[in-house]
Length: 312
Image (tube, rainbow, N blue to C red; front, side, top):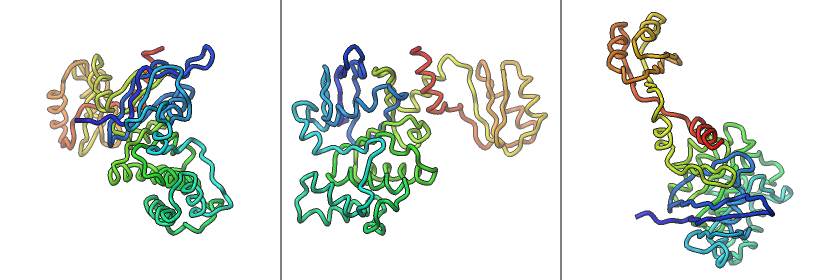
């Protein structure tokens, strides 16, 4: 049975007449990596601050790891970690010194600090730079140090707010791999707030989409993609050993096929009804072998834009 680690009920945050978060109901289960999506100003960061017990809700309630975010905010912060967007570090201190300071802020007993720092530096792959000043770190290394700071408390739940923004492709992949490792090896429950949809698709098992403070979708990416396909023309993806202009022309002539797009020996055949048999026979007639045939999956970007369009 799934165990909720993050749960909100009608969670609301209002500033004057403006509702930053509006009656939000969401649930993240133990051990999940969940993407928290929305455009800038959608209410993502405001929600994270309330879930950390750092901002008091106007109304509604929320629990994290079983603790009420208002009544038990100290316990919430004890079992959670947050890497905020644009996290700062003491540039003139080493990685080890930064983490030593964070340990003391979190009341880690003095005798446990050194082994704790060693452990978290190893977890994020920074052991060999332990005595290097942070001013010499790349942005990706700083983000890994930020993740290490989150791990100091050995949290049950971690919140990451735009952890890959501004990183180059190598740094982005390193952070993504780090989150997957922490989830798999330590069972860390992760809520990842981001508007970089490709990163979320590569990392998360399900997504929550928020718009103007309201939750408008909550499901696995696969289920959301399947819902998007309903009511649309069928698009089947084919991977072939060879593709010729004559083949494309003949496929386009099949009654019921509306378009054919080619991309790297893959054909995307758009049809008003399932014409897979006729398409397959035509491909075989042109001496091409089908290596893959499946319905086209919608990207998370397509899903995200579709849900936002429906709300307009």
